[in-house]
Image (cartoon, rainbow, N blue to C red; front, side, top):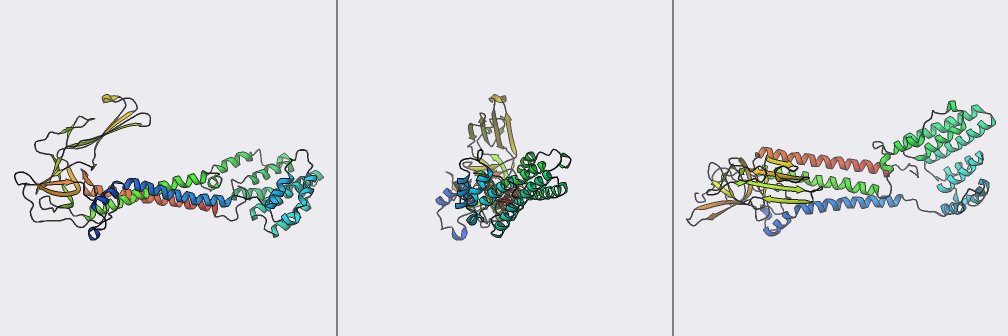
Length: 468
């Protein structure tokens, strides 16, 4: 090797980003004194863990926000709802509706603005065929906005169905059919708007009793239609029908995936920017520091190839993973430690593979019990071969041997920036990083849209029925 000479040809520019597989630089050329290299290296070594923790923390924050929305949606007992509970506390099987209605009407003046009271009073009135009283109750309740508009539509449909049954019993089939069709139309409209709301299906079932079988809409099983509606995704019904911790868990899982993919995408962006921002240096004239090099890979003089554990192929470097057990409970990792040489037309550099990151298209894997493997096991191997055209990033340093000759070394940087060797071209590596960036941003965007749409479907419609 020739002694380190003056710089000739293309030289590295200042780093414009972070190397692939790490967090963005925390100290650039302009502020390299902000953090010592040892701390920078420690931060980069923890980058994956920190990224995961940050993503899970952000997802947990969104889940907590959803929990607050859920608590706010909980219907809290009121004085009127407690009064209704007291009336029905002893059961209704042995108590006439007239008695229950009389006890309930004691609270009429102060409770006509309460949805629970209005619903129960209307039910008792229609059971007793007090249709006029039921309509008068709803008229006052509407003035006091006791329910949402759609809930009032359902209440009027109940009354129409009950009055239709009364006219049918009196022999007025025309009036009965008119009221029945009005109830069916209202219920179907509500079912279309709120497919998971149970009340419209109950109203449709009730209309079966208020007309001849020839007028009933076939043998439709409304309970089955309700179940199918609740299982749909694209109409928002599934999200609105989630209960307890389900919406919180859904938010956490989707948000965690979103933030992790965003991190992967940003990592790809910084990786592509790092490779694009560094100019390729000639090995002979490259200055010590973080550099980008290109050349071919060779054995270090006086060394023998290492043998890949799966392929038994003589190679410069290998890494193997052995996984066994039903859930890969046993994992064994092995990586060769023998140094090798990167050579270009101007010189060569010794690559120390300690903490190396390798991206290679020489890969093999085997499942099952072949080659000494046990059942439910997998052996994977990655390799670098003699003569591979290579792209490398790392910290270049120069030492002097006993004869006074300069020896160049490529290692992981003191500040933690990676030592990366790949037999992919620089263009291919940049394309891979950009693909990760696009995929990460796409998944993140899709997840954000999914969460926004889900929140809209569950929380925004202010006219949603109170009981879904």
